[in-house]
Length: 206
Image (cartoon, rainbow, N blue to C red):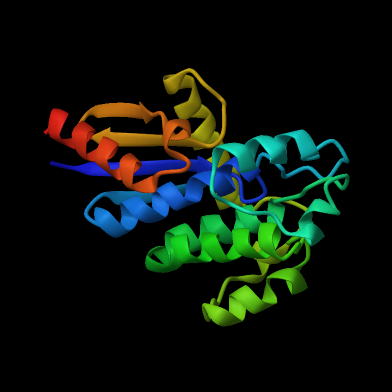
């Protein structure tokens, strides 16, 4: 049986942040399920319109187990830009696959727990050093997505047409020729229950 999990997310999306613990739990419990981390670059235009509201954060906190630092909360009125993170994560998912999920966790911790905007190369320096990353200079061009990141966005759009939703985050389980959209929102406070739900799907389609 061939099984893969597709996590469509944005590093600066609070709901994606709340969903990552489910991916962590699944990766730990079922490492044989191949993990595909697809950054959709939803917050890739810093035009002032990509703002996270206090109401959104209140909803995320009520339905999940993640926390947001005062530094992050104080910057809610500022537009978000995930271009650099989209570039880095697309590169990491391809070139250092075994580290990609840990890098995503580090980026989200820096952004939501430490209030790091992650919009300048210097904002990423600690993470680059921690994981000993040797990403090319194009990854750190904050002005535009790399060709690889842009291509991935187009792949995501094509996949979203298949599943008939553009909502993010999205967790998709591919088992052989079947594609199952998982109801991750039901498990945001119980990652173990999410793992059990995935096991049921795997058994059903094995």
